[in-house]
Image: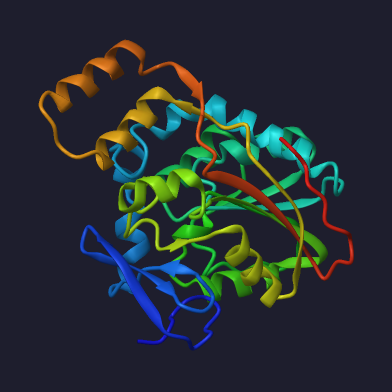
Length: 295
């Protein structure tokens, strides 16, 4: 079989392992990892239903409870971006209820968001007073350009990666930036856990990246790497336990252990301890030299 990844390099592929019936493939040449799905027409509606935001497992036990954490995350990213550009027009892709976008708005950005789940988009419009379109990036069109496009834990979810990234290039002004928060498949944690790494969760996640493959993707469509770092991510304990419960094998008293932990500490927040999540900044048609920012 030939590589079906975003680079269309035409090289051979190999199947690394199977997760929930989905083959996790890797291109022999470009190194990109991905899986394929059959039902593209109904994929977004089925995967990003309300269950994704309220039923735990590979999604969230209750997305709304993480409101304050995500607004703070938006403010932190706005501060990082301020080192490279001033506030302008922002598009937050897969913005859910718009909490991260709210952090950017409070930092002076003029924000739009897109979110395929109507419950989340409606909440953001009515409760957060944000401008959110109910659609996917693959289908979104705009009458004017953006200065910054945010893909926070989103890029691995695109069902048509080529169409999505081409649309990023179309929507972004020349010299504009794209901010990505993505899981690193070459991290020590990912390598140690193998197929049990929490990010191997198809059909929600369909693509997996490293520093190298992500750079290849954006260089191909005319972007230059600018900076990267580790986010100061905080996570709700209930959310963390839901991810662990989904991936860990069954063992005696597993359900009781997880339920008691959530009951005791579920409302607490902790700093995310693993270095398998990174942020990246790319600029469209830029000659700005690359820098490393430690955050």
